[in-house]
Length: 465
Image (cartoon, rainbow, N blue to C red):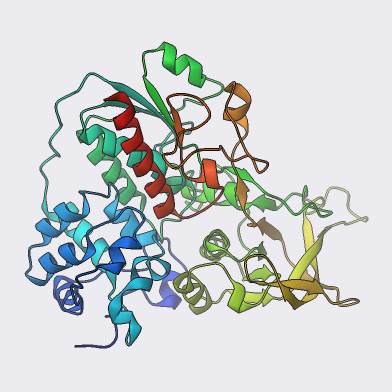
């Protein structure tokens, strides 16, 4: 038995750094079968317990071993509505694969890579639409079409509920379409998953801003018996340093939305975006990696990740960091921005660069005592300020739940960070109103949001039945 998981075929770094095509190419059937044979089919199945949506992992992998890929797909979709998405963006290394028994002595089984293979095989080979269950007469409204909303909608539709999903943007998919770049998650994959939900009877209504177009109370007046809020965390955080209002400074949300959803990378885009020059991305999470790698593909000369802790504390997935480094992203670790310096040409007031960015000033940091999460707190080194010449700055230091829904929904309790307060079933302080995902926790992973949507769907079903 091979002690190492099979490598994922990928585009070469020097090629992929200049296109938006998917980096990882996926397992072939032969590789998938060989990787599946590494699974020990443990009796206690620790990997299942570590999966937020409790996919029966050894069971679906057993079907891959025998070449019955559609049976494997049926096992996965018993509990997951988005297998092709999860196989690409779920952090398996800290969840199911972290508990894999093979991983005690060797590399864990490539569970995520196998899930992706199965979903892609199904999408390429099975054309029949999903069976639409008989309706049970109950109506449920879902606010937001991100991973938590889509999961809740899918689970309820399978049980016969009439489900309507209300999305603020013009395209369904939430963070899956506006936040994650094409080279990590092709939008055709997301569209295919959404089409599967439509086949189950889920109704999608786009360009509806709950809290503006309609309120949650109005949804009840329209005949919906329960509401699930999965509106995400779309409110960007900023550092509150001088220069953040300059031309050429973006939140990661805006930068990625313009590229991912509005296709700003095309030759004649419908929305403008800064291209070329030097780019600094502030932050060290997955969103920062996405923004940096997007900037590179948009034609940047140099892209810098500016992060105030060390490489060991980077919160981004190891795979994303590795890909970024392979592509030439430069990591300025143990550095914290203190000012964004404007470009000024006093000799030419009409210089178009005036009001833009000239450089980002940073101060060097050193690690002090660990914080409440066990990470060593960064401490500034006095007198160590320096400048990095850049034309664009992207702030990727996290997001918060949008306050619109809480402001327009009377009696909805939120915490001091703006997250909606829920119990273990996802029930809010209002009867028949449930919530989950980033709207509750703040920015987190796709799979954790899916788990919250699944929990809420079960609670809604219990409440209405």
